[in-house]
Amino acid sequence: MKKALSIAGSDSSAGAGIQADLKTFSALGIYGATVITTLTAQNTKTVSDIFVVPPKFFENQLRTTLTDIKPDVIKIGVLYDRSIIQIVKDELANCEKPIIVDPVLYSGTGIRLLDESSFEAFKQNILPLANVITPNLKEAELLSNTRVKSTNDLSKAARYICDLGAEIVIIKGGHYNRMNNEVSDFYYNFSRADYHKISNPRLPVTETHGTGCNFSSAIASYIAMGCEPKRAFILSNSYVNRALRNALKVGNGLLVANPISQIYNNSEKYETLITLQSSVENLEQLNYFSSLIPETKTNFVYSIPIPRDLFDVAGVVGRITNYQDKIRSPNVVKFGASNHVGRALLVANNFTPSIRSAINIKLTDRLLEICKELFKCSFYDRKYEHVDNAMKEGTTIQWGVKEAFKREPNLEVVFHYGDIGKEPMILIFAETPNGILTKIDEILRIFKKI
Image 1 (cartoon, rainbow, N blue to C red):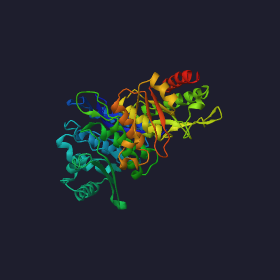
Image 2 (image 1 turned 30 degrees about the vertical axis):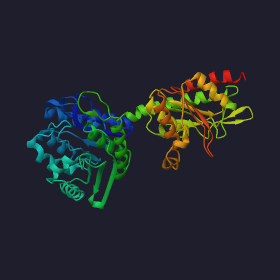
Image 3 (image 1 turned 135 degrees about the horizontal axis):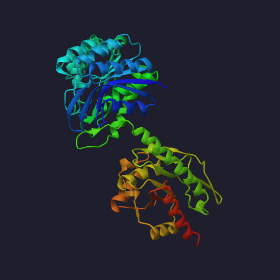
Image 4 (image 1 turned 90 degrees about the vertical axis):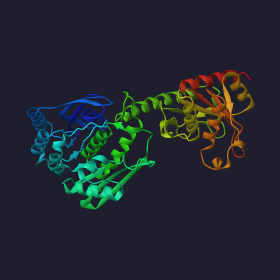
C-alpha cells in the first residue's frame, strides 16, 4: 500500500488540516500518517485559539514517524512559526520523496495561520523543498508580492514562486474573477514550459472549509500512486469538484467540503445495482407481464438517493423484451443504461425526491383505465412542446414529465398518446423497484380478468 505523510495542523471541526488530509488519503486508497504542528480550537465560523506544538515534541514526532513509516509522498500544510519551519527544513533537506506544499497562510474564516514574523522564513526554507506548491489566489499574491488582475499576472506570480525554489506551481482560482461563471485552476511547470488550465462551472457556494487541504492531499495521493504531477493535478481537480458538489452544512458557518462523498456514493451505487438486479429477476417471474411490453420495449430503472445525472440511474442493458408470452432480458443492469426512462426518473425525482424507480409499459385504453383506477395519473401532449425542444434528442420526455408533475404533484403515473413515429406510453413511478413490482402486480391482477 502506498503511504503519505501529512505535516500539518489539527482542526477540531475536522473540516481541514490533518483530519481532511486523512479523509482524502483514505478515500483514494492511501495510508496516511500525520505529524501535528498545531492544535486549533475552531469551527466552521472561526478559529478561537491556536496551540503550537513544542518544537522538541514536534521534532520527535517527525523523526519517529520517518524512521519507521517510509512515506511515498509528503504533504506540508500549516507550520505556523519559524521554530517548526526550521525543523521541517532540517529534517527534509535531503528527502528524496516528492513534497507537496500547501502554503496555508489564513484559515477559510480569515484567521492567520502563519505567524507574520515567520513569513520570510517560510518562503526561504519551505518553498525550495516543494516539488509542487498549491497556493490559492491570495496566497500566490502574498508569496510573489504581485497583485493579480489578469492571467498574465497569474503567470508572473507563478514564475516568482518558482524562482523561490518551487518546481511546479498550481494556483487555485476560486477567488479569481468571481463574476465569471467558471472557476479555473492553473498549472505551471516552467522548467518544461508546460502550462495547463482546468475550468469548471462555478458552483452556487461561497467560501468552503477544507477545500485546499483536500486538493493538495489529493495531489499527494495521486503522485504517491505514480502519476505525473500534471496528471495528478487533473485528477485532483475532478476529485475536489466532487467534494465541493457534495459539501456539507455541519455548523452555522462555512460549508465543509466532503472528500469521502465518493465512498458513500460507491456504497449507494452497489446497493442500487443489487436491488435493481433482484427486482428485474422478480419481474421476469410475473405471469402476463410480457403483454405489457411496448413495441419499443421496456426499461426498469433505479437511482441512488440523490441522482444528478443518468450515470446515477441504473437500468437494464438492452431493455426488457417479449417473445411470445415470455420475457427476455439480458439480466444485466448498469448505470447510464437507460436514456428515456432514466431521464423521466430524474425529472420525477426533482419534483418528488422519494421517487427513485420507474418502468415504462405500453399504453392501451384498458391499461390506462386500470392505471387511472389504481393510481394518481397525469399526462402530457407532444403537440404543445416547443419545436426547438422537440428537435433535440431525449428532451421531449423530460419536458413532458415536467409538465405532468407541474399539473399534478405527487404523481405515480405519467402517460402520453404519442405522435408521428412516437409510440404512446405509460410511465410508472415508485420509491423503490419493489414498489414498481407491487404496482405492476396490481395492474396485472385486473388485466388478467379480461
